[in-house]
Each structure stands twice: as structure tokens, then as C-alpha cells.
Length: 156
Image (cartoon, rainbow, N blue to C red; front, top):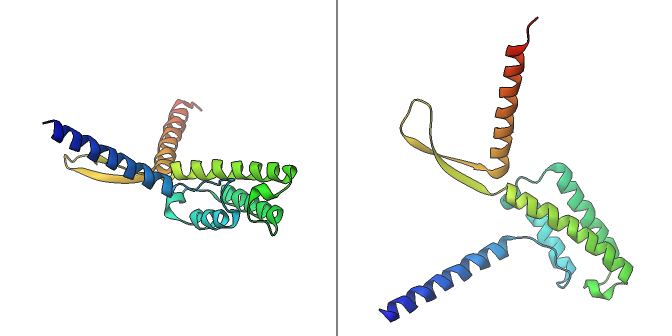
């Protein structure tokens, strides 16, 4: 019995470590301690990936501008610690902009599937939408309801 409990605990820990490693691997974050050129390439490729499909044009432009500023500041240097303190601060600020936008875009791009019954049917169907698509649908529905209530309350 004790062996079974130990085995179950070990399998659970291994599974948790695997899930954590996958989630850490898929997140694109700019890190000051890693080589900058590799990070720039990973951010540029992630912008067009499905994991970040909900990144808007304005945010994509802001990320590309921040990457351009970082490339200029880095020049021939490979690591951030080789730069002056002023340049490091500016690169750190651009890294924060990139990390914030990419984190939000990844969260909005997460696919969520729900089993929903359509009107007039008892057969549930899977409806898969990104978090951002669900938010937009909810906002559009709320706006349409408010508009129809305003229209119905309008008396000429």
C-alpha cells in the first residue's frame, strides 16, 4: 500500500513538472541574462504564431518598435550587462513593454472550449473560441441589448 502511494505521488510530481515545463517553454519572455539576439528572434517568430494570434496591430507595432530600439542599443554586444547603465535601463524598459504585451496576447489567445446546447436542441456541441473572441462576443451582445432597449424606450 505504501509503495502504491509513493508511486502515485512520484507520478503526480513528474506530471506536474512536465506541465510546468511545457507552459514555461511556450511563454515568450525577454530576459536580461540571456543572449539578446536569440530572444529577439524568438519574439519575432512568436508574434506570428497561433499562441499569440490575438495580438493587435497596434501592439504588434509597439513590440516591433521596442525590438528595433533594443537592436540599435545592443549594436555589436551580445549581452545586456556589456552596456552602460543608461542603455541597460532603456533596454529594460523596452523589455517590460514587450513582456507585458506578449503576456496579455498569450492570455487572450488561449483557446477555451465549452459544451453548449444550441436553441431547440438537447445535443451539446463543442464551441471553441479564444478568450478575446468570447470577450468581444459578450461585449457585442451587451451593446446590442443596450441599443435595443434604448430604441424601444425612445418615444417620438
